[in-house]
Amino acid sequence: MLKQFLGYAIPSALAMCIASLNTIIDGVFLGNGIGNQALGAVNIVMPITIVFFGLATMVSVGGGALISKHFGANEDERGVSVFRQVTYMLIIMSICLSAICIIFSSKIVKIMGATETLQPLSAEYLSYYAAFCLPSLLGIAFNSFLRNDGKPKLAMVSTICGTICNIILNYIFIFMMGLGIKSAAIATGFGQIVTLLIALPHFILKKGKLSFGNQKLELDTVKEVFKIGVPSFFAEAAFSVIIFVHNLVLVNTIGEAGISTYAIINYITTNIYLILLGITLGAQPLISYNFGAQNSKAMIEVYKLSNKTSFIIGALFAMICFIFGKNIIGIFTTDKDLIEMAYIAVNINNLAYLFIGCNLTTTMYYQAIEMPKYSNIICAMRSILVLPIVLIVMAKLFGANGIWISMAISELIIITITYKAFKVDKCTQMSLSNMTV
View 1 (cartoon, rainbow, N blue to C red):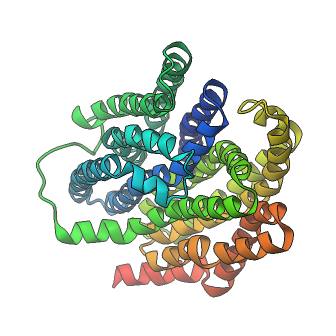
View 2 (view 1 turned 30 degrees about the horizontal axis):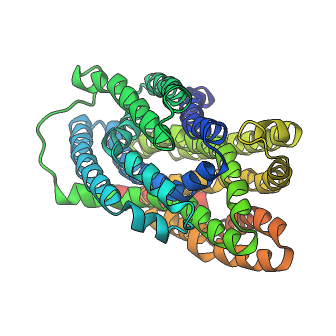
């Protein structure tokens, strides 16, 4: 089981790590090529981009859990049917999102907390980013389905190629052509197109079980995909809400300097967050498959392996930032005061990543065993129930440092509540019993 887990988790984590470089690279080029205001403007839009990612993850995890379950139960045709329906759903969602964000970009960034200075830059970035919504959502989802179809390495390769394209185009657009803040959005969009083009032949040429074909949308299947997948959206939305709430508190506590500091934190920590999410997504096909095969021992073993791996990675990341933090922050800005502020903030904030992996894994596990109500509870606590209260209280008591430590306290509280309220072993047996019935 360890070999199987690593065979899925490592390529998935590497793919997410490389994908996170898209965000980091945008920050490096924008900070050095345009300035700190560009960093702040993109940080205002970041909750929206995370929602895009969350929607793609919602549909792909919900669909992927059903696909792997059907494969585990030797119901391959049913698994293919779910894949085709999910593809249609993603296309419809992408077109709607692009239209809304392009038409109402200025109003959206204003709602997200953009100041008068940052509003034009934020709106411009959002408009161009939203134009590539279709390849972005399909690229994310198809990479997930490649893992469900037993091709985690191909998913990793497609992500690597898309990231390389993004790096090259970012440099050309910002430093050679001087296109401004829209450069980062356009480069990221073309990178997602490359990722999608590499993934597509697997399904078009029928190299695995999953393939394209005529398939009507079935209301029951759509409901089931959303029911299982909604917690994945909430998990990403929780991260989006975390950023949004932080931005509001920072504007009132520190000002634009606080937003720029938080932007740098997000550029750095997005990497580790997506690696932890990659570990979780790598474990999902194994848990879902064994759920279909009714192998509870294997399911629990994968769950524990995912938690242990996430904790080790979070601890290593915190150590790296403590030792090399100022050098890493210096990549994004040359402002010495900002570097000092961000170094303290990053190291306090990183304590949260000792616990976030456990909450992500537990959220995904309850989706995989078709008990999404527990996943929804965890996500609600992470975004709207626990964090805002902790953040406001800590900001009033300890100022800036209270803001940076609030997420770690919030995540630890949620782990404690989750462990006390519903146990994984008991819920696993309950879910398997319900499936048998």
